[in-house]
Amino acid sequence: MEMDKGRWGNPEDLSPPRYKAYNLATFRQIPQLSCLNARQIHEIEIVGHVFPFKVNNYVINELIDWEKAPDDPIFRLTFPQREMLREAHFRELEAILKKAPGKEAVEQVVDRIRRQLNPHPAGQMEYNVPIFNGEKLTGIQHKYRETVLLFPQQGQTCHAYCTFCFRWPQFVGNHEWKFAMKEAKQLQAYLMRHTEATDVIFTGGDPMIMKAKFFTAYVDALLHEELEHLQTIRIGTKALGYWPYKFTTDPDADELLHQFERIAAAGKHVAVMAHFSHHRELQTPAVQEAIRRIRATWAEIRTQSPVLRHINDDPQIWADMWNEQVRQGCIPYYMFVVRDTGAQHYFGLPLLEAWELFSKAYRQVSGIARTVRGPSMSCTPGKVQISGVAHIQGQKVMVLSMIQGRNPAWVNRPFFAEYDPEALWLDDLKPAFGEKAFFFEEELRRLLRVRKKRHEQHQLHRLPVHRYPIPEKD
Ligand SMILES: *Cc1c(COP(=O)(O)O)cnc(C)c1O
Image (cartoon, rainbow, N blue to C red; front, side, top):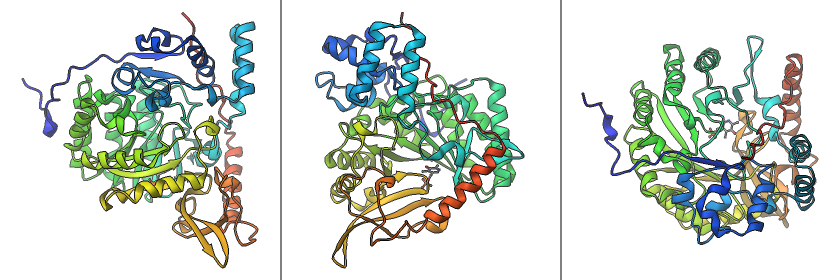
């Protein structure tokens, strides 16, 4: 019997490639690498010890323009760059790899370097992980009232890694069926008690790396009749950018799309929060077909990305990207500022430069694309948007406001910082007009103190930093 293909139909004309990933141990086998010289390959090798590195055949064959490598934006998005490490760190690691390539000595140096790169920014563990029935739910974060984040253990990796990734000290997932069931039940119980939550956000890693059968188990849990308050199931994913076949020709693609349709039929919204950093990621036949099929299930695709030096720090790239997204029926959602972690010194733009870039792009697209908001930083108090520069009583100040706040009352209330063209993050900013603190700071300190105390009582250990095993050489 013909399998019911649902409304999305058969994938059009695509010969499906088999997924093949490369990492630090195997990247020298990539044929296109012959266009790099020995020094460039050596640099990838060194930097790839500190930052996660994984790339796949789709990114290599369809996205990277090898004639432009190593300056090509998609190459820079996926291959470690020398400047991502500070010079002293680079040399130290180079020396130890040359002198004593023994595993333990190298890991010690790597571990120490990673610890100096603020691996767990914005208090994600101490402040956002809920304690429920006396148990810490380490797979859940609940920072903003309406939205509960789920980090399914089966989704703790990605089809390829972004060099700038702020979740670079990741979990290594547990792929057992039993574990998925346990997590789904925990999430369900938590949501039953938290009727203020309207959204669940699957995040990771990339939740779309998980097999559809796991996703189905979570959907079963979320469609429980006592979860009527749940409106939207969001899926934060880079799979459209790095492996669109997940939605077209992978063996479980149809089962996955069936789940999207099933959620919609149950009266809830599926929002695919797609991560696109460059318009080239929207241009292959494979991604266009994947977008078409997802949209045919009633799901909507909203798009987001950070603004990144050396990759997309040009308003034209953003305007082109938003226009292309709109043309394919995607909804531009957020532009982020890179977090204060990892190689921020390489990828980061000053807040004011990000605002100027955002404005130049925003001014040249129609209102349909101006659903995008930003530039926004996800920091401890909330998502802070840089709204611009104003002259108030002879003073030049930066105008900010929160798109999200730990306290919802903080949202959409303008506040002012001293003009600082070099500031990269909220911590670098000073309140304007001689104020001692921003309006939310005292309350924030109080909120965090309470949370921290509760966590200490439950002995939440800090996550170890060293998570990515260094792959063996063959
Ligand atoms: C961005 C974010 C959300 C979602 O916020 P929206 O503004 O609703 O998109 C939820 N939780 C955390 C921790 C976030 O950073």
